[in-house]
Length: 339
Image (cartoon, rainbow, N blue to C red; front, side):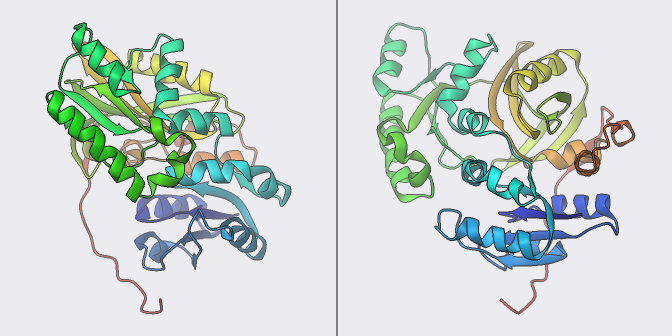
């Protein structure tokens, strides 16, 4: 059973978790636009591919899938998800399972304005969110919104370009800066469909921050959720966290999983402010916080492999325990000198 990871980047831990789960029963293949990507070092096979926006990108993946008898594809990049979802059937016609959600789920999750509306329709508490500067200024004038505020891309990735505004002057400056950033960044392509409304403004919450992995099976049926309390962050990702089991957290995880019907793992961020839960964002893929869930006892790679084999009983891979504290650390990878 060979599994292909696209946009592998720095996710060495996922490569190794899946290698361990596979044992001698398959190979892990990783691709990236650069052969110096650290995750490629730990894969059994590594290939360089064009940018996800290159017209040849999908064909290059199809060649790798065909030549290496790939059983499943897993993407590790937000911006790639809508592209792969469009071509999902083409790969599955080749006998390869693409473990990503349907287009509508990916669209809702990647578009933070649609995410806000999704939460609102389900009466899930979430930060007040606005899509125009005029509506923000009106809400402040009416005392229904207060500073500080978060200003960020509507279609964002990896906390790119998030600003905090403490007053009107900073808000207007941050808003203009966001427009310039989007025009000059990788987000320009994904924002092109509505560039005039490519920025959102949210109320800034002060509370305890959590992450949650919401796991659905490959039919979109809810399996479980696994929560961590974030103790520190670095470059937009969880750096230190402790595992948590809480019935109220699980209730929200199940509600989201049942309504999105997403496929596989979904990364979810939320705050607890004065004992009230506020859901922030959804990312229908493995997130940077997954290792904390894994090390606390949920072996999602082994569960994926079981489901790919049509084995439904995966209880032996769920040993998740609360109170497990972990911290990431830096390490060097020796890159083969053949790039």
